[in-house]
Amino acid sequence: MNLDMADWMERFAAIGGMFYELEAVLTVERRVGEGDVFIDVGGNVGFISLTASRIVGAGGKVFYVEPNAKLRARFADTISANQIANVEIVPAGFGAVSGEMKLQESNHHGLGKLTSGTGVKIERGDVLLPRVAANASLFVKIDVEGFEEMALAGMPEIRARPRTQFLVEVTDAWLRERGGGAASLIETMAADGYDAYLPVAQRDGSLEFRPVAGPLPQNQYDLLFTRAL
Image 1 (cartoon, rainbow, N blue to C red):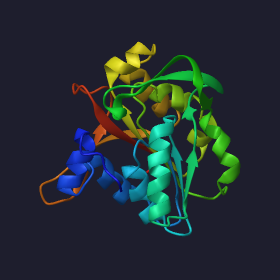
Image 2: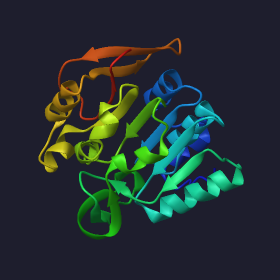
Image 3: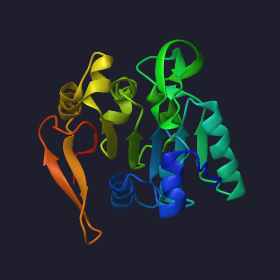
């Protein structure tokens, strides 16, 4: 990868040799298998998509979903340079309805937010289902700075599939800006039959999944939603 040393997240990866969200990487490594389909909603520079690409192998598929054209171009260069064939770039954001929105960029590209306006294509996540085999196991990672509930609202068919898991970033303050919140997100997934777990990395390199019944006191955390742990 061509990393930007001026960005703290990329600098961490260059120096440490890993993506800074250890629990996210470990969850993907533990819960995604060869031949699976992985949907990376909010792909950013592609750390998680690349991890998933290695795991699912030639028989699997990764959909990298990113509304930021600059990040998409960088990721396209990465997969081209590494001759990666199992990744498809989706040039859009995922929301409750199809249309357009505006991307409000930040000094740190990981903090870009979708707002009212035009310029960025918005799709419902279920648009991908015609390209996914009916018997495929699905893993969906969503990290979209408070737009997570909107993204989930646009994928009712994906949520209804029996072999689907989600890793969702939960930031209650940002979710509330959209009229939702951590509680409503967890309740929505529970209504679809999903149990929530907090991934916690252990000192020995293992990963513990702690059951979660409601919002946590942390400002920001990732939750694994699955029907079978």
